[in-house]
Amino acid sequence: MRTIMPDSKSHPDDWRGRNVLVMGLGLFGGNVSATRYLASRGANIAITDLRNKDALAPSLAALNGIPLVRLILERHEEADIDWADTILISPAVKPSNPFIAYSKSQNKTITTELELFLRACPAKIAAVTGSNGKSTTTTMLSHVLKASGQRVFLGGNIGHSLLDDLDQIKPDDWIALEVSSFQLAWLPDGLLRPEVAILTNLTPNHLDWHSDFEDYSNSKARLFEHAKHVILPEQTPPSWTIDVSPIYLRRAGGVNPLSSFSLFPLPGEHNLLNAQAAMTAGLSLGFDVQAMLYHLAEMKSLPQRLESIATHNGLTFINDSAATTPESTFEALRSLDGPLHLIIGGSDKGADFTAVSKLIVERCASVALIGYLAPRLEALILEHQVRPLPLASHTDLASAIDWSILQATTRPATILLSPAAASFGMYLNYEQRGQDFNRLVAERVSN
Image (tube, rainbow, N blue to C red):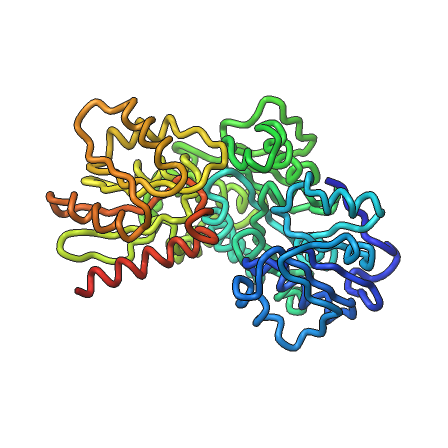
């Protein structure tokens, strides 16, 4: 993707007199923050969205008091694009979208919330991308950056728009930035120039958006084209050619400062790998090892990432709703002791579930299947089954939880929501899925 902002000689914060069409207000907050930002800088704002007023209620409420030229719901129209100078889109919009094609044919500027931030941000940036572990690693990186003694702002794809913090951010501050493949695909070349950039890992993902794995991989690679320091895992695509020096492999083994760090708070080998990447980033920037370890010791599990939410009658309920890929669920199963009663399933992003299906057969005491993927997952699990394994499909999460509780005849045991897939078709996003899990569990443990 290539975008060019209008009037490059003007200050990036000056939007006076420009007509901006927000094409997709959305429910995740990014375009809400961008709308507030643009309005405060003098832009004329119009909004169109395919959703209805009820679905967008939280986002619309967050814009109370913001003057709008027009608000059009349940459709997009070319006439609104004709009115606009600039089109603000969600990064999740596909390049093949016909309204994007029309915008380009009319030479409209296309921008995103992240591009707006990067053009105005004065601070140093440390960025993270990858297929799994991005949010956890970015949060770890924010703790590591605190060893510099400077203020640290955490945001990006992790769910917080840094535009909300822009008025507070100073040149000496650090930004811990999570970046998705969608965001990277839409950014102009050379705009993102991080002091340090981390790749957590790279496995096929979002193949319902990207044309193929190569396209997905190339999108990720854009983060490293202009980074001063690059932190890569041991396995990286052979096609990547990064003309950056130095490049560091994530530290491992005896030379890893975490090897003797008994206070590391998060479970699982995958979290140690994430912490190694964040520590290596700090070492590349010259930070003190002990200071980094001190700040890492304060790290807590992020919500809905292997989050233990309740223990009742010998059952521990763990919310891992943020596991939206098979690799994330694979690591969750490796990290926990049995008996494990797994709730898995959701919408299909074109991922390969073979490896996680094999591990499910090895590690799980029962499997409750939900969502569009249920038939496909059931077939894979049965294909690899070598012992009787209770297995059942469910139309909703409540039924899956109740059935899993009945299967847990040997206690102590764990009921684990780790869907390995996106939530679409049942929930708006993984956060809503996880919140529903927490609510349903709270109802059952209170009885």
